Image 1 (cartoon, one colour):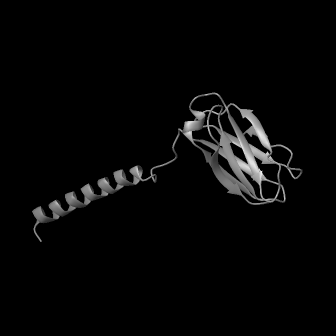
Image 2 (image 1 turned 180 degrees about the horizontal axis):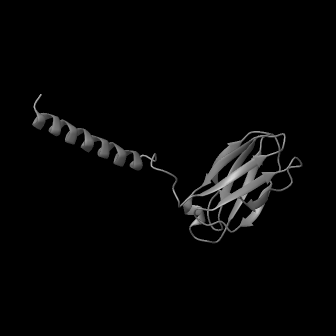
Image 3 (image 1 turned 135 degrees about the vertical axis):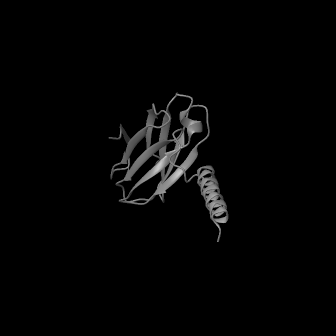
Length: 130
């Protein structure tokens, strides 16, 4: 193989690698979206919790399900946190009629908060995560 063909192949492979790297960023493999906020939700109750986020004047948005005794990291969409008016995190518990909530928490894009549903399931405690 001549050196000009090898050089052309290397250039083509480098171009393909660059294109693949750019394509991965488009499909969400390029890193975290700084517009969303993260909620580390600890479910200490005995019931499965469907977790919702709601900003004043908007609809409830389901952000995930956390099983009893588990802690999961959930994303709060940037559409809810971008306006700066706060977010209320609400849990619907399986087979129960109560819906504990955190109250309005001032969360901004990129923030990480810790939410804890205690065993009595009366309310959700919210603190900035470390």
